[in-house]
Image (cartoon, rainbow, N blue to C red):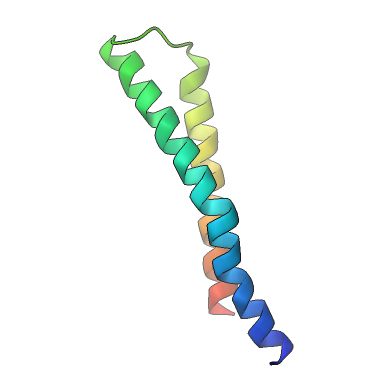
Length: 71
């Protein structure tokens, strides 16, 4: 295998180790934000900010993974 082939294997590893984990945390924060907006539970306003920050990390991770996959 060439170096390009090994680099192509980095794409799925990156997605499994990074992106899936951050997606799970983002979904959990989304549930907390929704509960806060509906008045079901009392969450701190910082939950909204954390959800947005996690969303940015997911977006960046997906973009990097796609760029590696297209190499």
